[in-house]
Length: 250
Ligand code: PGA
Image 1 (tube, rainbow, N blue to C red):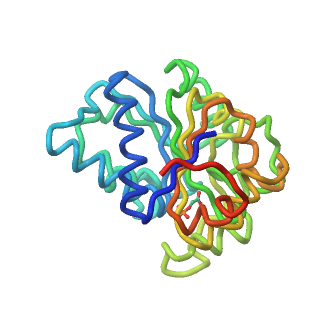
Image 2 (tube, helix red, strand yellow):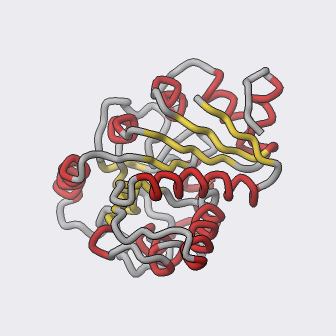
């Protein structure tokens, strides 16, 4: 694993965007695995800026997103499809038909998950998967205790994830209780992984994920077994890793 330490959120975002843009420049028709949440927003802003300057084109790029709330329409402001449109897709030249987000309104969620696994295979797999990490160590909606062998599946959100995500909704009761999510197996099959972390409140879980035992109790810990992981974080989020002597690049 390579660890890049940036002083603050903005430089962390620029670093992550650099890694994604290098992927897109070296393989324009690559498959990007994309993530939602607060942490990648700055990364997407940076990519949009470079696209607008003419430094980057996504005309041949394909994307698959990690997850979607069950029961939310793509037009719901808190759906992950809406998030991706408003934070990235609407501002770059990626072709709409090349962007893939699970359908939260699918009549058969189980069939939707199976079709998504097939889609990822048909696309030739994921070249670079961007990830955030939850306070409980979840990646996508793979919550503590979930089986590492799962592909895309229906998930019951934990209370801690509902608590963390309620900031985006008017009321806690509005947070969906279920989601569709790629599984750890899909994520581990990506050729490269880029994980972004920011803020002091992530310092403990970052330490547990990358210095603790590999265990389903901390889903992100499985990334220790992946051969090509880059962790990009700000100083606050990486503070415990650094204290423990993890070698970092500046
Ligand atoms: P955050 O979410 O980036 O908003 O902290 C990360 C996650 O829950 O995966």
